[in-house]
Length: 221
Ligand code: ARG
Image 1 (cartoon, rainbow, N blue to C red):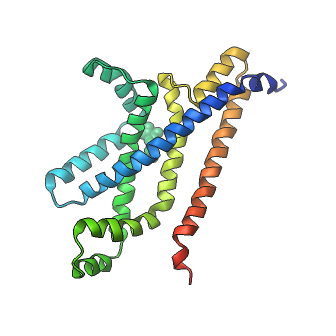
Image 2: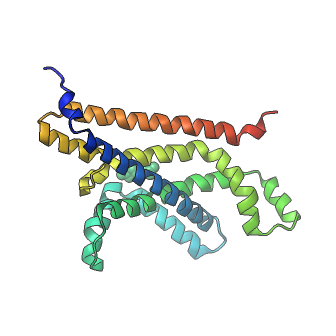
Image 3: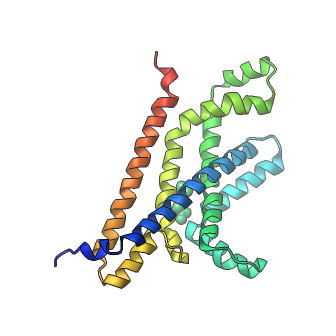
């Protein structure tokens, strides 16, 4: 059985557009999930019981059910309930952002708890308010420590975006599916997108390790 990649290359625009959508959704959800995750982490470490309960409930729902099921509820279920439909991209962005925020909030909570108690005490004794203390002192230090976990989250988002093919979004996996239908070849298109995902993850890791070195630059004396 010989491999034939020429038939796959013939349809490279499919892969190109698929890759663009994969990257676009990953980037948007990584940013939105990160921001929502910070808010959720602050909610969970707040002093208000109802807020804390809400934060815990949110996290347990989004971590406790499969992402694919959440995606189906948003894309196929919500229209029935609300009477309007979302495009596959919109559903993807909404679901992945909500889901990622749950994971990011736990990463952040751990990071914030890990910041030395002395930092809080020093801020308080200087009369710095809670908001400024979090924004200028605690969160920047937390981010530094949790950077590797945040990168893991971005990698998870990138790879999990492949489940968007299930609802018909033409991202990388769906693009490969379309090529299989047109060429009657399966191994080559799927192998090619596996390599593309892998290259993306490698690039992301490389950028992340540079970023890590940069944020830790002040640690070197
Ligand atoms: N496959 C997992 C699920 O179905 C992925 C969850 C997403 N993971 C993440 N770190 N955002 O629940």
